[in-house]
Image: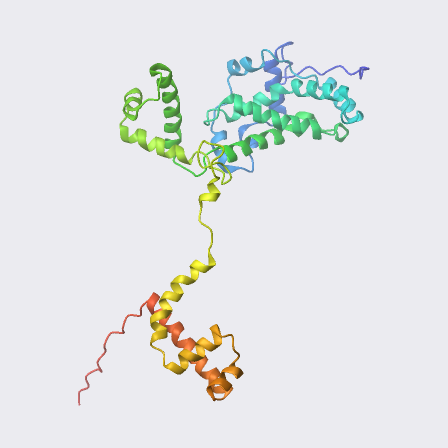
Length: 340
């Protein structure tokens, strides 16, 4: 592979001075400032996540150094050359796979930098890094070096979007107070510590003594944890994979069952009908006869059958409505007393 002949521009600090050579932390911080990678901008468009993330303090130099001491700031000129070569190679080529992996490894510091913006939100940092890496891989596969955009600028929205999607899918299914969210984290940590110490799952009273809080608060925190994640309707109803899915245990709409209430409510109303009106209903709805056929059967006109049928149905409908929502009798009013 031939060199492009360009000399990488030394990274500069926020104050405009060149960053010390070999200092990946300063270089990473400078790139973040140049790209506008601040919490409020990284979370634009998602107020639920953005408001909380923006309030988080920026990573300290010591924390960033732990992440980047073993990684080097990616050489932008070399990265661009690799992207150009990647675009030239066909799918399935072994060299293409090697270049793709190299580009992913080169930009892992960006992944960890963005993942740390969402730390202390109940998800392990390692999980967030894995999710962010998925966004990085997608960005590497989709990046077009001919557009003249820096890869970090292109990849940042995709990586952050992948992290936000993770919180939406794996985070709190319903909104609960911040106090309960923090309590859930404390209970999770305390349960893990006590389980290792006791060799078994701790009781509510043991957790309460460990955290120096009441058992009622512990129970409240345990109940709020049920809102942390939703369960798929396709998931097994129990831990056994052979168990039926949750959806299989739910009721389904039964049209025949829906008519039971109406039929039972109609029975006393039908008993009160005169014999002729009752027979017209039976011939019309159970005998499937037309009004003309009913008129011939009863020896009356079709118009008369139509009137009787309409009146009977109105009477039954009114009876059902009154049975469901009985109308209170109007208060008795007396005529005003007139004086001569």
